[in-house]
Length: 382
Image 1: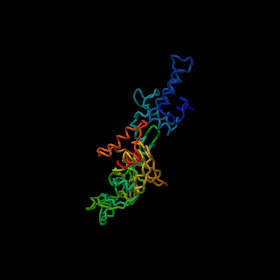
Image 2 (image 1 turned 45 degrees about the horizontal axis):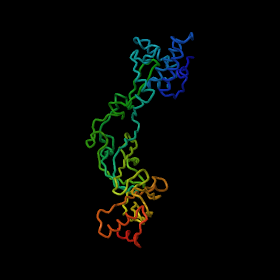
Image 3 (image 1 turned 30 degrees about the vertical axis):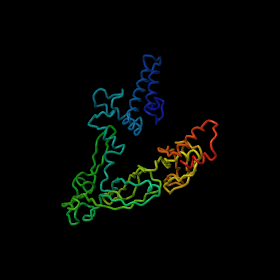
Image 4 (image 1 turned 90 degrees about the vertical axis):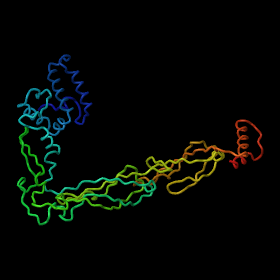
């Protein structure tokens, strides 16, 4: 039994392309005929090169993993037998098209193309539809029910989605003999490969009709307006998608409807910025409030609350109000609200206020006598 390509390079079967390249370079340094004393160096070098070329080509590697080493080697030999130069064992395309063989055909057969796409006359689920819906931050906070109006394909009532009137004459499709599928057999280096696809003439129905529905023009669907109620859960974020099952396009041949995907857009709020489950808010306070401390009323999405401002608070300082942010989507609890205070400097002063601030400035950093009740007077004046 020939040595597996992964074993030749000494890598695992899930090795990345970079790992394969690095393993090849090590083997090349070890077995290059110009530097190695191993009598079998040339053969080992060629094997390492061949292994690298197959395993760093996505399509060849998938085929190699699917077929196994022995079958892959046999297919390579058969594919190269009738082709031109450059498709041999030194790493040319092992599926080079000899004898009319198309690599894509067999690749589709192994990995879901070709016949696997043909559904014949079996029921098929309808396509998913997409739309957008805009809500306010308050609605994202509490959760809500929104009315969504869309235009979407629906089953034609006049023909019940069949695409032809009930009275239309029918005949078995001569292309597929009523099977809804056509089969093509192709000779490949691995033998005969059978590919199945939906019949193009009857589009998988297996039957042809002499009339088409005048309402839907044979498509089986019509565009209708629909009004849906959408449940918005508390804590939904901007850009997230809600799925309404079976509200999408109708299925074919009795298959179920697809789904409706609704991408949510949450409008910006004038008072709050959002980061995940947390909110932030900028709150203005006066100079005396920052100096002497105070209790202020702060807005939240659940109503105003009181927050203490300690004496000596600096402009830009941030206070955390635990649990006053957004609800955690489909989880317990809320995020937090971060309040950044901004000290507002008065832009106009009366004479009394100016005198009070001048005394305050003179007292700063120095032992200066001030009149009794000075700080109370300063606080009240501002």
